[in-house]
Image (tube, rainbow, N blue to C red; front, top):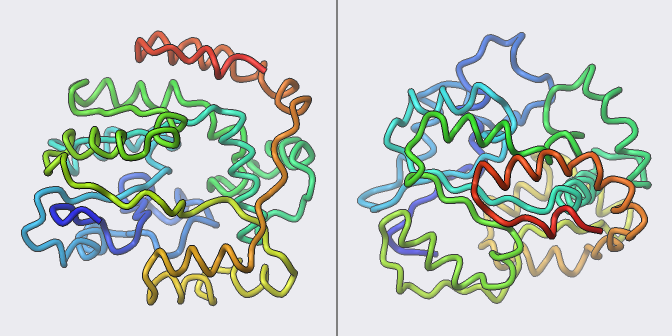
Length: 270
């Protein structure tokens, strides 16, 4: 929304994580619309004009270890924003998203988690990395080793949700645009929702079908409102499930607290 900001025409370019790689190094199920070459990457920004801040958003950047060095080489003066979520909540949201997209056939979260290693052996994309992608320390350490600390803004998802307008003011100031611009934060976009029927899942859950057509041709607010009509919220994460998954993340969260000098005690409790 900010008039001084331009975001890439494809939200997740995946260029620095998966672009310019030999075919045998790219996960077979990587997003087909990613930027495969530098030329394709730059094409996503061809309409940037005189925008003061030009950016993109690729969650794969934190997941694949070589990304930090490749990003440093491609855009050495980049400013980086990393939004981190409670690891168990992130894993569950990822599962709900996979269900929404029609990729995940398991209806039980813990059953899907139990299949992660099996699936990882044949699919190195992020499609089923529910808990694997919820370990943050090592990925973030790679960026902190290559970029000055003042060029990396780390936010907690909880803070972004609790005070979205305040978080946006902080982000605007960080990227060097007018921090007083008031963004419309009334509508929550890109929520993990479940289709209300199999027909909806088939129509909206596959790449290049109805969902992507609407995303490319309608305003985001309208797409979100349509989704709210045909989707339903997933059930909340059960406390006993959280308690069983929590121990696997405690060490990573403690290391992250030290790395960032940030209190993340809430992520270590059930």
